[in-house]
Length: 70
Image (tube, rainbow, N blue to C red; front, side, top):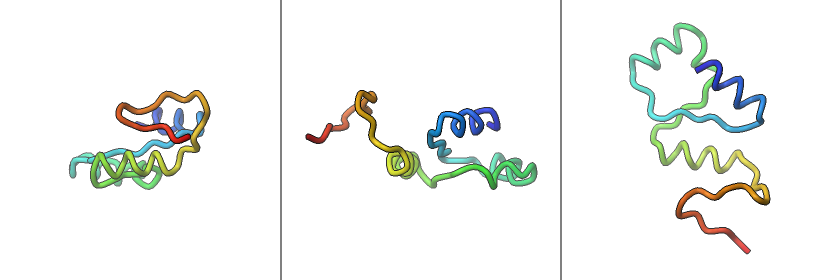
């Protein structure tokens, strides 16, 4: 988990987890890692959070079903 967080920061990419089981949430909170992670209540919310935080880049692959503007 920490390695993924570091990689996402190195690549300036968003990392949003969803959903987190209660036992994993507790472990991450006890270890202090939870404070560094973004967690969404649902997969849909996680996708929206990633899309909102990621600038559109020319040539980037599209998600399936995503329409390209313009």
